[in-house]
Image 1 (cartoon, helix red, strand yellow):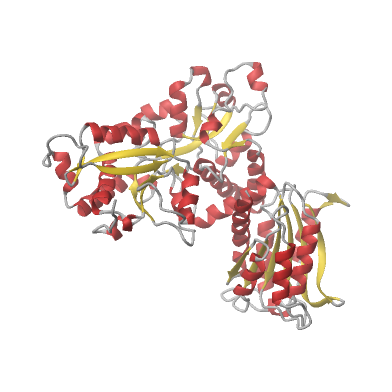
Image 2: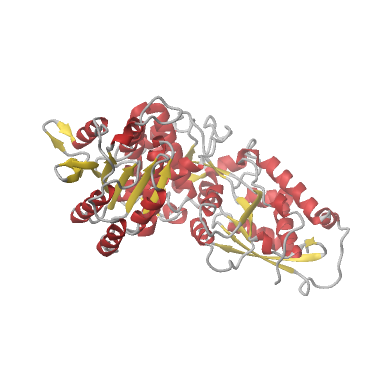
Length: 591
């Protein structure tokens, strides 16, 4: 079918409001559709547009891909549209809905490869729409509103919930997660945050709450909780529910592959309880520090290429979910249509009871930065990491950071210490510093070997020793940037110490271009890195150019020769977030 622009393309491309304002979102989206369709939707609903005979000949075919949990509701609405001959501009709409995991569609659209065979995408969360936007060649995705919502909590089999005081006792996320993992008698499972919005939003909330409660120790606590959770993750919510203990028998309780508690959405708990017996049902805890919510954005795919009939049909289908019948269908399948006033029937069906705070306002969605940090932390938590950190100690690191009364080195140290707190005792991290002729004729010096953070020597852990080494970094008087020789030596060292089953990487921080006239050339370094890199033993370089004097193009070329990535930050305080983002991206390539 030929495609061309919508009359009001900019309007339809605007992101919808926050999920907690879902009623207003659909109202706004509906008004937007009426503008785009010139009143067609109102006419259709009022019966003013009529046609004779079958719709088969002139129906507009609309292909929708949707998250598996919302697909049954969308298919029922599509059937309703066919049965009642719902029209758009006088044409019936023939909606075909296919279930696909949201993370899979997000990666496909992010890559921009091929022509998607669908017109509308309904993922379970806006975080996937955001992920598409991170691609450099992504297919355009235009959210037009949110059709439903579902808060995330922790569901437990009745015996486990009773042991924790449900429904009267309430917990914050870190407390509830810790309580659910304190012994083998109560095992907590979750869907993989790299593939599941439920898992990712919950982990992000656990991390944010742990940091708020634990201060400086919050990052370490969050990483520890993630580490424990990572041992009991599944690829999807469907598989996660299959891990529940099937009954209250001793055999099931003692089965190490069975869980008594799960991180789930209210809708998933509702759907499970609808078919489970009383003994196998879930009781739902709604954490008191706020439940993140799945928000089900309705997004047009490549709307600039759509025909007018197709784009209007797509938006007409969306307005059905603001009708009484559409809301009935969503509620029947366990979705909230008004997050501010959830129905008692839905909450009860999902396993919620008063005084659990199921009607509280949703917690603020995590920012893009928080999502990237959470994914980075998850990558290194699941695999464990082996990182060699190489820090520029040249004279220029004494320069003050604009807007701060601190040098580049001081801010860099602070950011590295912050990053260190997010690693677990199983991770291996080492430290080098470099300038020109720092150690005899060499431009680099090893300060700490790459060892497990939890290893003890002489009463102190490697984490303690590494923390002290970070804190002790100082610019070398008169030292210049000996980047090329250092990078090659550090890369060879990282390869020699490669640890299978871990995420191996070399992290290089520099505030300038190479200044050692006696070193190898950039071309020689890049060619040697390219020759040394081994796909079977990947050691990507994460090179970070710090400040305005650093050469971003140079660090990108160096990093990409190893399969890694180059980055530039104006403020060293951004180093922590960049490292985690780079780790997440490199980890996803290896996966």
